[in-house]
Image 1 (cartoon, rainbow, N blue to C red):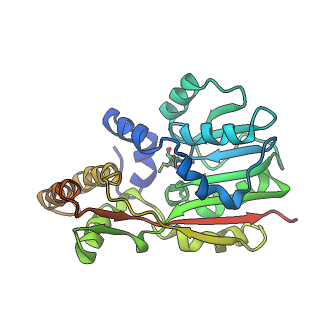
Image 2: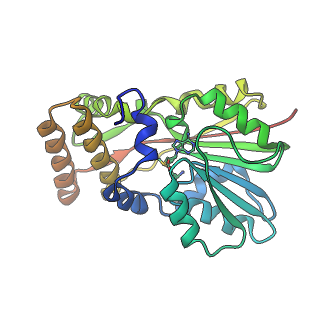
Length: 262
Ligand SMILES: C[S@@+](CC[C@H](N)C(=O)[O-])C[C@H]1O[C@@H](n2cnc3c(N)ncnc32)[C@H](O)[C@@H]1O
């Protein structure tokens, strides 16, 4: 049984079927995500690591960019994501690995690029993870973080106060909700050169964010951090708003890139 203290990681190690299905919809590769990768300057021939690769669709997109002269390795703590991704994979330049903690099964200086997309908010200790990232990055290679910062979130028609209350109630599912603003400093502390930071914001008016909000209602139900009728009522309100054109969801992504120079 997961405790509130360890739920942020436990809820990734064990995922019920219904949530797996939602993730397979949420984490598909879309060409519009290329903008999130600009700072990484991915090129054919590079060796790339995708930490927290989930169902592996994003890693598949990366493998398409680096081509057959390059290679992508995806790692994740969820064993089912890794076995499903391995079974689906038809690319010779893509490999998936199950990991159990921050330790990466690769030699020092293996990778030209290490990508971390929406994973650092869930690791037990960002500094420990980034030291390991530094170890496996080549001299002249880059770490590239794509992550959220819950201080910049908006969901309409909920308004600011109710949106904050809802996300605070879902907090047990996250270890570091403000990783977006902290990522550059954390990379510097791990030994990387000063990072470049960009922020990319996309306005969702069609309801893509509903899957995430649905997962959050599940977390709220688990921990009774808000009356469940209030949470489900808010979700219904958001669903109805998609139909009548009042829905707006925006969770800006911090794009943080730093080079290993020593
Ligand atoms: C929000 S999902 C992002 C998936 C994928 N990066 C994407 O954006 O499409 C977070 C992923 O990180 C994985 N994860 C969580 N904690 C991790 C850890 N300590 N080490 C590696 N992966 C982890 C989860 O299992 C999950 O697949």
